[in-house]
Length: 344
Image 1: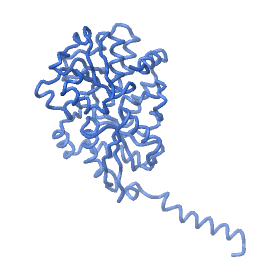
Image 2: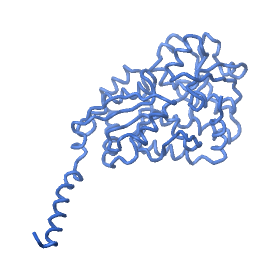
Image 3: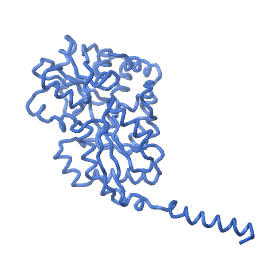
Image 4: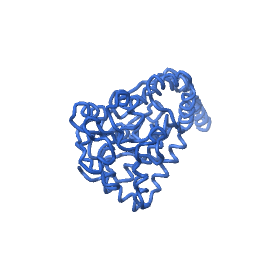
């Protein structure tokens, strides 16, 4: 043992022996006995929360090692608090995933300094559905049609000047001449929903069709709301008689601006893991998500929860859509950024 060459060889062998089991640890071994935190940036009972919990109840049995999947609400700033946390703070080992707001993915593109993430560096797992955003009017208030929104001020509830609920009507006012006025300060869509029911505001821009069906089904069943318009690249088949502002636009620049704001609806409810998660665990999570979509128990839960699964998307498709949004011409981005960054 006095020979330095022998000592070095034995030390190297010992280091290899200690590191080899960790390096060779399978995905199954890693997840066995662990818990995965599944985050959502909105409060309980909101549309994103409902979608998150339906997936959460079933995906664990499809992940190697069958970890427990624990739901966790982290509301704040229209979902931005959770998205920043997922990117910058959450463990990067595959034990934390989240359901970011799809419309937040372009915030860094528009220079939002509060958006501390790079959407292209998340590990996107997939999405349960595509979706279409709507502007709703509380029927009793008389805010029922696009013509109403074009001819008189309609008071909308909002979650903050830099959240979808304020940005969407601001963009619509600029592109097609609606007269929406947003009153901010409501913490989430559930709070705005209560305000509509109590007569504090007349409507809300940002509820998706899936959210209304899952979180507020009685609104549709009892004809309490009117869908003033739908905002999506392609109109929803269940909303054939509801106007889409894209059909009203003549110039290409306005169309591109509209698609930059509302095109993210195609990614529906995207699930992501932080950057830096080992590739084999990302692959396992992606496969588990696809297997969940084919699970009969999951589909039964979908029906019970009244959510839409009308366009499941895999992680690669979500990434491709984000790259497409980030390829929007700079002049269009600047125009939309100016609208987004105004303070109501």
